Figure (cartoon, rainbow, N blue to C red):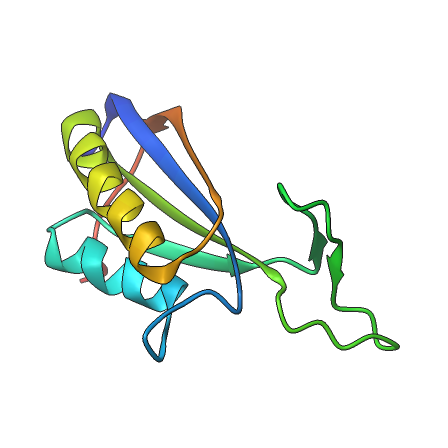
Length: 115
């Protein structure tokens, strides 16, 4: 997949409290991406944000938010990403979760494991 100018970046925006059963949705998404053979996944925790419900979540010291924003990012070739989006949508349904899914162009410059 190295030097691929036609890769895609999948971004999945969810809340920290979203779960499938007892498993955090972000964790389930990463394990599912690995199971599907995608190239890799990264989860980032936001310190502040709001979504479709317009409720602001923040990590400020004087507030205790139970639902900080989480972003799962996956880069792979387009057909792998598009197939995975269908799985993600089903996982959203199973979690009874809201969220946002985006796909963007990405150019892979380097993708190698350490030796």
